[in-house]
Image (cartoon, rainbow, N blue to C red; front, side):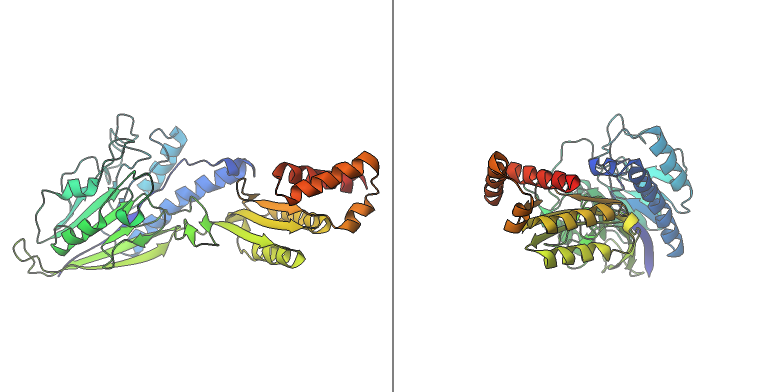
Length: 391
């Protein structure tokens, strides 16, 4: 039986920067970039240890089409250490236009840019058909266009594309790769496997497991724990094995067997916590969730707490979060969704000893904060912080 095994990855996003990295100091950005590069080396080792014939990168190698010289030098160093051929597909972040960093070649004999849709032989009886992204403007179903004139083959054919599919349809319809059509092509053996990039969570888009997103090798966005949404299965690659009968031919293509194994490539974690807070017990549950993370220096946490708490509870929460912020790579509240209000108890207001206009002003802030006035909530929080410093 004819067979091939290869590693499918995508969405390296090399050179990616995030504003919330800067909030925790420059070391987080540097360590994140280092992790992205290290993941390439790990995938090279995975390809070697699994006996892969080649590696395909299904788009968005770089965050932009004009990465820094330092990023280019670092990725070249990692690619040079990979022992099998590597095929790079331009994606929407690094489209195949005049400024693509590898337009003139990669400088490495075993690393190839997938810059056209012509089938290319990558191993005995194995060919790749690429659907490179040519510009920032999306083309509807670029994979179908690349495959439209092809007929069944007795060998193995793999398509490589980048974009959203009907299974992941987005509101703006930037990309539309029809997975139903790809299933039909796979049934006819016009293509045996479709390696996709753009969605950063690893997942098959068809029940037969012939069309896959590999997921990003290092998380790039948050997993929304409350809903299971967001980037919920990244930090991995997939190793694909395709086998066809020895007697397969164009006239009698037979049936391809496809198996896919997900393999972790990074320990970094990005989680988004949303919780309703009604008092001390809820605060401790949230804090215990944070304390339980094993590798905090490789963990990025965004949180959104809603509800109202006393001044003492708010003080305790802020102190604990300040301490934890020192050990997490990133720990910060969502600007748009964090709405934890301060609702000081009567005795807490009394202990301040306020009289006259000051007492009236604080009382007015309390009333407005209770009515979800964020400005009043922020002012009340600041007032209690300053009062704690004074006393």
